[in-house]
Image 1 (cartoon, rainbow, N blue to C red):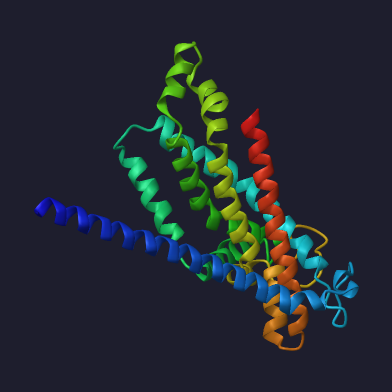
Image 2 (tube, rainbow, N blue to C red; image 1 turned 120 degrees about the horizontal axis):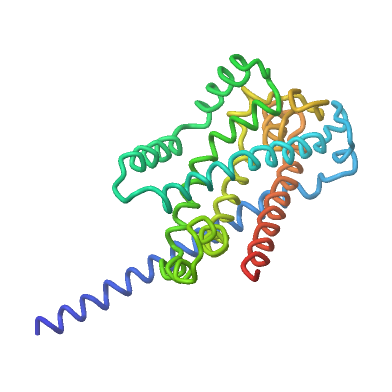
Length: 280
């Protein structure tokens, strides 16, 4: 009797858990569809040629300068953060000993940095990059502030991706006479590419969607700067400024549509590159 009750209880528990999983999936998908639909409905109708003028003015409220600044900011941030994050993860997984004090300190530091509010990063960037290094309120100050923000994310996702590569891959490579460095770059990293790119995609999303930190470091100038040490706003900051002024709400919704399309394009490109690299 006890066995039957346990089996019955187990089946009921499984059914409840299954229902909760399906319900959570449906709610998450519904919220996503609602958000995307709301943005499209509110913004698509206000997409007009004047929004895509090369130069911004108070009449056309063009988003092109902000879009260009967003791309520049993203490229600079990733060019600096990805090699550092991947290199740190390789050290933690492949070279450091298990139970190493240095590894524990690095991981604790990365987790702590991941939980710091973005406004704190902005204040640090303003004090260090803008003031101490005398870079001023500029694209470069904003990009390096974003590097500090996304570095823990890239490092931890890359670390988990490297850990997921079976040890048999490494052992087979060593058995064929390959060295440590060759094994890492020829065997381990290609196998971990999908996980690494997942971290890069998340980091890109954080860069594209950031506003608080960039207000203090990159500034809110609505034009493309003549150099990397000039001020310029990103798309998210452009949308925030328009909505905060309250004079161009329709254009702010249209900017949100463009921002959504940009993120989808970046994600699609990353998935395409991951598939291509996986086949190599």
